[in-house]
Image (cartoon, rainbow, N blue to C red; front, side):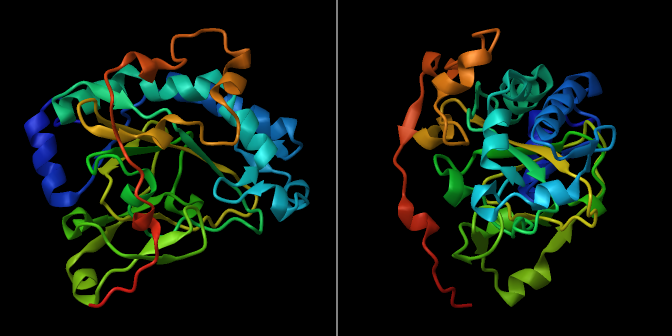
Length: 295
């Protein structure tokens, strides 16, 4: 936490490691109500056995056909739509501690991407761990877009926390191949790169935050818990002066913003990006095409 107010020190650390990790950055009083809201959706759909620890009714969840699942998320399409309707889900990424971190890191005003991904990783048989990938081909815009990952509860490695390939941001954009799991892609590294770089993993406590730029390779560890749900946020931030691709400002579901906003009590975070001087970039579909890598 000593580096958090020192932008130069943060940038120097990132230049070497390709990520930053902060213990207890977010207060529990900001996270636990959102966790309760998410578990409320799980309970509404009949899958919650014990909300105190996120224990699931595994048989009820497994009965959901794969065709009705968001396999990249861990629950059904209907449940995830309910999650995306939650005002608390869209308010949390604007927490002052997160904005202060990225303002210091960028030395610029901050754009919070509106497209928040809420992972609800479950033991449904159609759900697979997220494979090793870079976020840039999925997000595009600027390569200086940062992902912020944090769990909504204690998340030991055995529950499927995130794993980082330290220093991988220095490899540039890596060719892709198809893979099972969220995103449907994985990067191709060469043996000499694998020998030089280290995978870093660890246990997360409530309030811990991991953040990294769009070229850092990362993946999810498989969960060893067969009756628990892992709740976590993927939020993205960038300097306001950098270009953004328009899909980053769309909901992460099939609903419109008008549908998501129907039950909100406040308009503070509705269409907030429309009030900002944004620079847009075009989507490049070629970045997501599989390509054989010659090492």
